[in-house]
Image 1: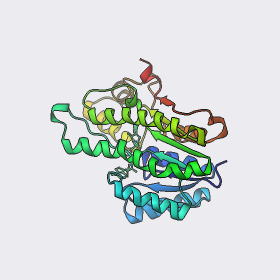
Image 2 (image 1 turned 90 degrees about the horizontal axis):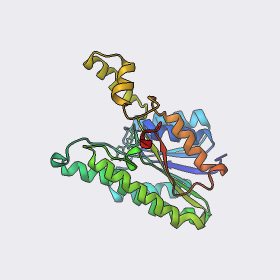
Image 3 (image 1 turned 135 degrees about the vertical axis):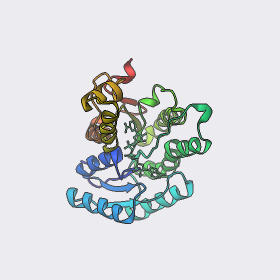
Image 4 (image 1 turned 60 degrees about the vertical axis):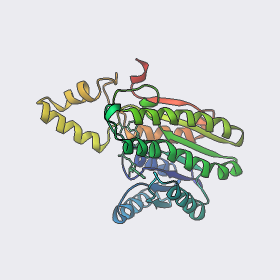
Length: 260
Ligand code: NAD
Protein backbone atom coordinates (compact mmCIF):
# COMPACT_ATOMS: atom_id res chain seq x y z
CA UNK A 1 0.00 0.00 0.00
CA UNK A 2 2.86 2.42 0.80
CA UNK A 3 5.21 1.25 -1.94
CA UNK A 4 7.05 4.21 -3.45
CA UNK A 5 6.74 6.28 -0.25
CA UNK A 6 9.60 7.09 2.13
CA UNK A 7 8.95 7.31 5.87
CA UNK A 8 11.32 9.11 8.21
CA UNK A 9 10.71 7.88 11.76
CA UNK A 10 12.58 9.78 14.46
CA UNK A 11 13.67 7.88 17.57
CA UNK A 12 13.22 4.52 15.86
CA UNK A 13 16.14 2.53 17.23
CA UNK A 14 13.82 1.09 19.90
CA UNK A 15 10.34 1.09 21.41
CA UNK A 16 7.42 2.84 19.73
CA UNK A 17 9.46 4.34 16.88
CA UNK A 18 10.83 0.96 15.88
CA UNK A 19 7.31 -0.51 16.08
CA UNK A 20 6.00 2.21 13.74
CA UNK A 21 8.96 1.79 11.38
CA UNK A 22 8.34 -1.98 11.20
CA UNK A 23 4.62 -1.52 10.48
CA UNK A 24 5.29 1.07 7.74
CA UNK A 25 7.97 -1.18 6.20
CA UNK A 26 5.51 -4.08 6.29
CA UNK A 27 3.11 -1.84 4.33
CA UNK A 28 5.84 -1.32 1.70
CA UNK A 29 7.37 2.06 2.61
CA UNK A 30 11.10 2.68 2.42
CA UNK A 31 12.30 3.69 5.87
CA UNK A 32 14.81 6.14 7.29
CA UNK A 33 15.54 5.18 10.89
CA UNK A 34 16.85 7.72 13.39
CA UNK A 35 18.18 7.64 16.90
CA UNK A 36 21.19 7.43 19.13
CA UNK A 37 22.96 4.16 18.29
CA UNK A 38 26.45 2.85 17.66
CA UNK A 39 27.50 2.17 14.06
CA UNK A 40 27.14 -1.59 14.65
CA UNK A 41 23.64 -1.21 16.15
CA UNK A 42 22.55 1.04 13.29
CA UNK A 43 23.94 -1.36 10.68
CA UNK A 44 22.20 -4.35 12.27
CA UNK A 45 18.86 -2.51 12.52
CA UNK A 46 19.05 -1.36 8.90
CA UNK A 47 19.99 -4.79 7.61
CA UNK A 48 17.34 -6.54 9.72
CA UNK A 49 14.51 -4.33 8.45
CA UNK A 50 15.67 -4.47 4.82
CA UNK A 51 15.95 -8.29 4.91
CA UNK A 52 12.62 -8.83 6.67
CA UNK A 53 10.48 -6.48 4.60
CA UNK A 54 12.38 -6.08 1.32
CA UNK A 55 12.40 -2.26 1.51
CA UNK A 56 15.21 0.30 1.33
CA UNK A 57 16.39 1.41 4.76
CA UNK A 58 18.54 4.40 5.72
CA UNK A 59 19.71 5.70 9.07
CA UNK A 60 20.48 9.06 10.66
CA UNK A 61 22.29 9.35 13.97
CA UNK A 62 21.54 13.09 14.22
CA UNK A 63 21.17 14.46 17.73
CA UNK A 64 17.70 15.96 17.40
CA UNK A 65 18.24 18.53 20.14
CA UNK A 66 20.47 20.35 17.62
CA UNK A 67 18.67 22.23 14.78
CA UNK A 68 21.81 22.09 12.58
CA UNK A 69 21.96 18.31 12.96
CA UNK A 70 18.26 18.13 12.02
CA UNK A 71 19.00 20.18 8.87
CA UNK A 72 21.75 17.65 8.07
CA UNK A 73 19.36 14.72 8.54
CA UNK A 74 16.66 16.29 6.35
CA UNK A 75 19.28 17.04 3.68
CA UNK A 76 20.32 13.37 3.71
CA UNK A 77 16.68 12.22 3.36
CA UNK A 78 16.12 14.67 0.47
CA UNK A 79 19.32 13.66 -1.37
CA UNK A 80 19.18 9.88 -0.89
CA UNK A 81 15.41 9.24 -0.74
CA UNK A 82 13.82 12.21 -2.58
CA UNK A 83 12.44 13.55 0.73
CA UNK A 84 10.08 12.20 3.39
CA UNK A 85 6.53 11.48 2.23
CA UNK A 86 5.69 10.28 5.73
CA UNK A 87 7.22 11.99 8.75
CA UNK A 88 6.84 10.40 12.17
CA UNK A 89 7.99 12.72 14.96
CA UNK A 90 8.54 10.25 17.75
CA UNK A 91 11.87 10.80 19.53
CA UNK A 92 11.38 11.80 23.14
CA UNK A 93 12.67 11.48 26.68
CA UNK A 94 11.22 11.94 30.15
CA UNK A 95 12.41 13.45 33.44
CA UNK A 96 10.47 13.30 36.71
CA UNK A 97 11.05 15.94 39.38
CA UNK A 98 9.11 18.57 41.40
CA UNK A 99 9.20 21.84 39.44
CA UNK A 100 11.17 23.68 42.14
CA UNK A 101 14.02 21.18 41.69
CA UNK A 102 13.60 20.53 37.98
CA UNK A 103 17.08 20.78 36.41
CA UNK A 104 17.05 23.68 33.92
CA UNK A 105 19.23 21.72 31.48
CA UNK A 106 16.68 18.84 31.54
CA UNK A 107 13.82 21.27 30.81
CA UNK A 108 15.76 22.69 27.85
CA UNK A 109 16.60 19.20 26.54
CA UNK A 110 13.01 17.92 26.76
CA UNK A 111 11.57 21.01 25.06
CA UNK A 112 14.26 20.76 22.34
CA UNK A 113 13.79 17.03 21.68
CA UNK A 114 10.10 16.41 22.43
CA UNK A 115 8.78 19.65 20.87
CA UNK A 116 11.21 21.81 18.88
CA UNK A 117 12.63 18.87 16.89
CA UNK A 118 9.16 18.25 15.45
CA UNK A 119 8.93 21.92 14.42
CA UNK A 120 12.27 21.68 12.61
CA UNK A 121 11.60 18.37 10.81
CA UNK A 122 8.14 19.57 9.80
CA UNK A 123 9.27 22.97 8.49
CA UNK A 124 11.97 21.23 6.45
CA UNK A 125 9.77 18.39 5.11
CA UNK A 126 6.49 20.12 4.33
CA UNK A 127 7.54 22.00 1.19
CA UNK A 128 8.44 18.72 -0.56
CA UNK A 129 5.16 17.15 0.59
CA UNK A 130 3.14 20.12 -0.70
CA UNK A 131 4.94 19.94 -4.06
CA UNK A 132 4.01 16.24 -4.35
CA UNK A 133 0.44 16.96 -3.19
CA UNK A 134 0.67 14.16 -0.61
CA UNK A 135 2.18 13.95 2.84
CA UNK A 136 1.45 12.41 6.23
CA UNK A 137 2.88 13.80 9.45
CA UNK A 138 2.22 11.82 12.62
CA UNK A 139 3.42 13.05 15.97
CA UNK A 140 3.84 10.58 18.83
CA UNK A 141 2.37 12.65 21.63
CA UNK A 142 1.12 10.99 24.83
CA UNK A 143 -1.82 10.85 27.20
CA UNK A 144 0.19 13.74 28.68
CA UNK A 145 -0.81 15.84 25.66
CA UNK A 146 -4.35 15.74 27.11
CA UNK A 147 -3.92 15.53 30.89
CA UNK A 148 -1.09 16.22 33.34
CA UNK A 149 0.65 14.30 36.08
CA UNK A 150 2.65 15.94 38.86
CA UNK A 151 6.46 16.15 38.53
CA UNK A 152 6.46 15.93 34.73
CA UNK A 153 6.33 19.67 33.93
CA UNK A 154 8.65 19.66 30.91
CA UNK A 155 7.19 16.48 29.40
CA UNK A 156 3.57 17.60 29.83
CA UNK A 157 4.36 21.09 28.49
CA UNK A 158 6.15 19.65 25.45
CA UNK A 159 3.38 17.11 24.74
CA UNK A 160 0.64 19.76 25.04
CA UNK A 161 2.80 21.86 22.68
CA UNK A 162 2.93 18.98 20.20
CA UNK A 163 -0.87 18.89 20.24
CA UNK A 164 -0.96 22.58 19.26
CA UNK A 165 1.69 22.10 16.59
CA UNK A 166 -0.29 19.16 15.18
CA UNK A 167 -3.47 21.23 14.81
CA UNK A 168 -1.63 24.17 13.22
CA UNK A 169 0.22 22.01 10.67
CA UNK A 170 -3.04 20.20 9.89
CA UNK A 171 -4.64 23.51 8.90
CA UNK A 172 -1.65 24.65 6.84
CA UNK A 173 -1.28 21.35 4.95
CA UNK A 174 -4.90 20.38 4.37
CA UNK A 175 -5.38 22.00 0.97
CA UNK A 176 -2.13 20.48 -0.28
CA UNK A 177 -2.87 16.85 0.61
CA UNK A 178 -0.65 17.04 3.69
CA UNK A 179 -2.34 15.69 6.82
CA UNK A 180 -1.06 15.90 10.39
CA UNK A 181 -2.31 13.95 13.40
CA UNK A 182 -1.06 13.04 16.87
CA UNK A 183 -1.22 9.61 18.50
CA UNK A 184 -1.47 9.80 22.29
CA UNK A 185 -0.51 6.48 23.89
CA UNK A 186 -0.98 5.62 27.52
CA UNK A 187 1.53 3.20 29.05
CA UNK A 188 3.25 1.23 26.30
CA UNK A 189 4.77 -2.17 26.83
CA UNK A 190 8.39 -1.60 25.79
CA UNK A 191 11.42 -3.62 26.92
CA UNK A 192 12.15 -0.72 29.25
CA UNK A 193 8.78 -1.12 31.01
CA UNK A 194 9.21 -4.90 31.08
CA UNK A 195 12.39 -4.42 33.14
CA UNK A 196 10.60 -2.02 35.49
CA UNK A 197 7.87 -4.57 36.15
CA UNK A 198 10.33 -7.24 37.29
CA UNK A 199 12.33 -4.78 39.42
CA UNK A 200 9.25 -3.31 41.10
CA UNK A 201 7.81 -6.75 41.82
CA UNK A 202 11.02 -7.73 43.56
CA UNK A 203 11.32 -4.45 45.47
CA UNK A 204 7.71 -4.51 46.75
CA UNK A 205 7.36 -8.25 47.20
CA UNK A 206 4.29 -8.47 44.97
CA UNK A 207 3.60 -10.35 41.75
CA UNK A 208 4.40 -8.94 38.31
CA UNK A 209 0.67 -8.98 37.53
CA UNK A 210 0.01 -6.83 40.63
CA UNK A 211 2.75 -4.39 39.60
CA UNK A 212 1.23 -4.02 36.15
CA UNK A 213 -2.35 -3.63 37.41
CA UNK A 214 -1.95 -1.67 40.66
CA UNK A 215 1.25 0.32 40.17
CA UNK A 216 1.95 1.05 36.50
CA UNK A 217 -1.56 0.76 35.12
CA UNK A 218 -3.42 2.33 38.04
CA UNK A 219 -4.69 5.10 35.72
CA UNK A 220 -5.27 2.90 32.65
CA UNK A 221 -8.81 1.42 32.96
CA UNK A 222 -8.20 -1.58 30.67
CA UNK A 223 -5.30 -2.56 32.98
CA UNK A 224 -3.48 -3.55 29.86
CA UNK A 225 -0.46 -2.00 28.17
CA UNK A 226 -0.72 -0.41 24.75
CA UNK A 227 1.59 -2.34 22.40
CA UNK A 228 4.01 -0.94 19.85
CA UNK A 229 2.31 -3.15 17.24
CA UNK A 230 -1.05 -1.46 17.92
CA UNK A 231 0.55 1.97 17.51
CA UNK A 232 2.33 0.85 14.33
CA UNK A 233 -0.92 -0.42 12.82
CA UNK A 234 -2.67 2.84 13.77
CA UNK A 235 0.07 4.83 12.00
CA UNK A 236 -0.38 2.69 8.87
CA UNK A 237 -4.14 3.37 9.03
CA UNK A 238 -3.48 7.13 9.18
CA UNK A 239 -1.35 6.79 6.01
CA UNK A 240 -3.97 4.70 4.22
CA UNK A 241 -6.88 5.88 2.05
CA UNK A 242 -9.24 5.02 4.94
CA UNK A 243 -7.43 7.61 7.08
CA UNK A 244 -7.63 10.41 4.53
CA UNK A 245 -10.22 12.42 6.47
CA UNK A 246 -8.28 12.29 9.73
CA UNK A 247 -6.55 15.64 10.13
CA UNK A 248 -5.57 17.68 13.17
CA UNK A 249 -6.83 14.92 15.45
CA UNK A 250 -5.32 14.33 18.88
CA UNK A 251 -5.95 10.62 19.11
CA UNK A 252 -6.01 8.95 22.51
CA UNK A 253 -4.82 5.33 22.51
CA UNK A 254 -4.73 4.83 26.23
CA UNK A 255 -7.24 2.19 27.34
CA UNK A 256 -9.55 4.95 28.62
CA UNK A 257 -7.01 6.81 30.81
CA UNK A 258 -7.99 10.29 29.56
CA UNK A 259 -11.73 9.55 29.72
CA UNK A 260 -11.60 9.84 33.52
P1 NAD B 1 12.54 4.72 23.77
O1 NAD B 1 13.45 5.17 24.86
O2 NAD B 1 12.35 3.24 23.53
O3 NAD B 1 12.97 5.39 22.37
C1 NAD B 1 13.40 6.72 22.30
C2 NAD B 1 14.07 6.94 20.96
O4 NAD B 1 14.51 8.30 20.88
C3 NAD B 1 15.32 6.07 20.74
O5 NAD B 1 15.39 5.68 19.38
C4 NAD B 1 16.45 7.03 21.06
O6 NAD B 1 17.68 6.72 20.42
C5 NAD B 1 15.88 8.33 20.52
N1 NAD B 1 16.51 9.52 21.10
C6 NAD B 1 16.66 9.83 22.41
N2 NAD B 1 17.33 10.99 22.53
C7 NAD B 1 17.63 11.41 21.27
C8 NAD B 1 18.32 12.53 20.72
N3 NAD B 1 18.85 13.48 21.51
N4 NAD B 1 18.42 12.62 19.37
C9 NAD B 1 17.90 11.67 18.56
N5 NAD B 1 17.24 10.60 19.02
C10 NAD B 1 17.10 10.48 20.36
O7 NAD B 1 11.15 5.43 24.10
P2 NAD B 1 9.64 5.08 23.73
O8 NAD B 1 9.00 4.62 24.99
O9 NAD B 1 9.54 4.25 22.52
O10 NAD B 1 9.09 6.56 23.41
C11 NAD B 1 8.97 7.08 22.11
C12 NAD B 1 7.99 8.24 22.12
O11 NAD B 1 6.75 7.79 22.63
C13 NAD B 1 8.42 9.42 23.00
O12 NAD B 1 8.08 10.64 22.36
C14 NAD B 1 7.58 9.23 24.25
O13 NAD B 1 7.34 10.45 24.90
C15 NAD B 1 6.32 8.66 23.66
N6 NAD B 1 5.47 7.91 24.60
C16 NAD B 1 5.95 6.80 25.26
C17 NAD B 1 5.11 6.09 26.14
C18 NAD B 1 5.56 4.84 26.89
O14 NAD B 1 4.84 4.37 27.80
N7 NAD B 1 6.71 4.23 26.56
C19 NAD B 1 3.81 6.55 26.35
C20 NAD B 1 3.37 7.69 25.67
C21 NAD B 1 4.20 8.34 24.79
